Amino acid sequence: MTEAISGFDWDAANWPKCAKHGVSKAEIEAVLNHEPMVRPDRTNRGEPRFNAIGRNAAGRTLFIAFAIRTVKGHKMIRPISARYMHRKEIDHYEQSQSP
Image (cartoon, rainbow, N blue to C red; front, top):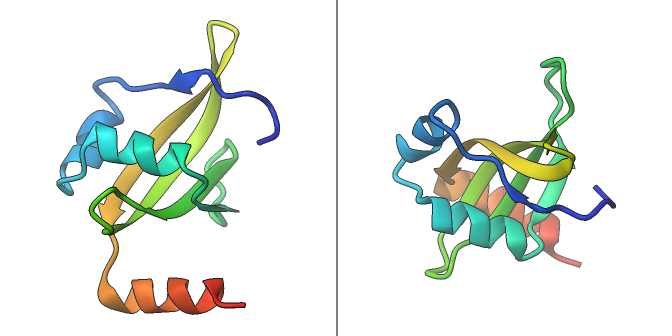
């Protein structure tokens, strides 16, 4: 993901998958714009996907699955799914961030 990203690719297919967990577009975009921990997704779905973990402005930890797609010649982040993380997941994430 070294190329410049032009924005976010939202539509009627991906937005409902994110919204069903109570996460807003603004939260997702803010987390992805503020250097979350990003790792490749291990599932094979036909396109490279990534998992991001970061905190929203209120400090809640989010898990976001996304892909990078080219839309009209621009690299765009396409959120696939987003949800708030459970305490056990947060503890594991925080341990992995410790020096």
